[in-house]
Length: 337
Image (tube, rainbow, N blue to C red):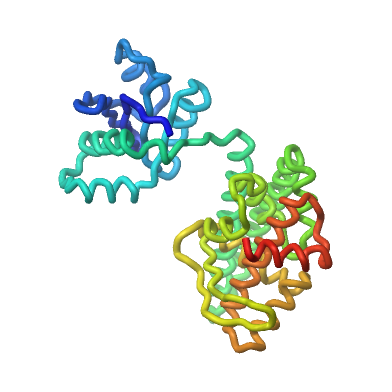
């Protein structure tokens, strides 16, 4: 665990960077626009006599606004960067009875937090492929949302007392264009995934119920589960609460989906679970068994989602494609891990 004598606290907004250079006792405040060039010109080059390789640059996660600077400092310059969850810094502020709320005070708070806890939040920059996959997944999701919205509009027009064929035709043309774009993006995703994860892609896609989107998330965004030692860590990260407990043929307890975790991954996993119920032997058997024991359909689907994650985890960690007989024994092990 490395501690730092100096910390640069950076409060990031869409257009500005509020900066506090903290040596453990005093703060020096700077402000500039949110760009790598401005940060270099107005801060790094102005502060003299500092070995930046021995300084921690501390930020809090701001959606996307911190990513360019954090990635530049870490990947391009090789500096130590930490990006904390805003809730952790807020709790630190509450514990220290901070009341003032300004950009200047926020950067000071971030710097002081970094001096004590920054080592817990080391930033690991993603490479270009990660963002290429992520941006396409988001585009597909956005386009699908637009298709759903337009279909709802068409339904509304169809209920009017007079037909609106020309307007509806225009809507259908737009929907067709969106579908064409989605198909193109999915093809690009497949090429991107196979460029780095060909073997892993084939392993994941061998599981009945797993589609392109879930494979893209597992391989591209979650990096083949490399940062997870056990399947239940993945379940926790996603925000699936596996409180349906099984022992042999018995099922007991309740289950629910946590509001924490990654909502987008849960959504994709939910859709894949419906497919797995139809085509995946183990998922189908689990689903029917839970329903027959009186469990609600939603809770049964959550259990299937958990099963699907464990199957994906199993084939990736063991390097073997989906095999119902092999997984029968494997899932017994991973469910305990």
